[in-house]
Image (cartoon, rainbow, N blue to C red; front, top):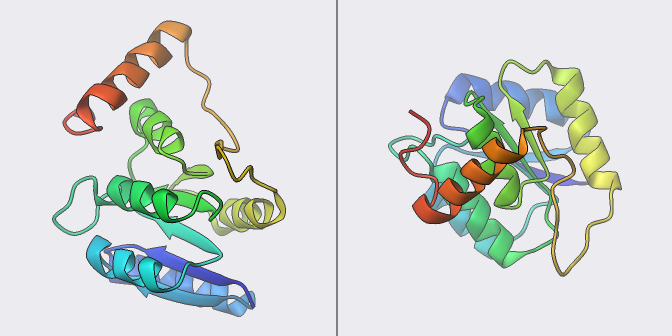
Length: 158
């Protein structure tokens, strides 16, 4: 049975996704903060991580968690599921190693399709690449890329 970890600080949202995924036959574990999820990842890697970006008092805790998880394993699939829908956040999340980036207004069928396709795709063990990239103009993409590198993503989503 595939193990999915959901890292979401809003209990109602976390429990809703846990219930739905369990009904689809997955072993699902939920965490409400980055440190607990990080400790769990260091003990046992999931088959898929679904991560919110803002976690409790860490405005970009999910970005940090993604980077830490990617350092532990270049192949564990990661999906961001977040309310933050700016182009900048999307590009940064994908460049940090996430396989997909969905907003919380996404209904369950797209999430179901995303994690199923993530499970079935094969990833390179050397340099994982996002499964999709948002379409941005070359100038805007370069600007975002530069800001991601120089700031570590902090303070750019205002």
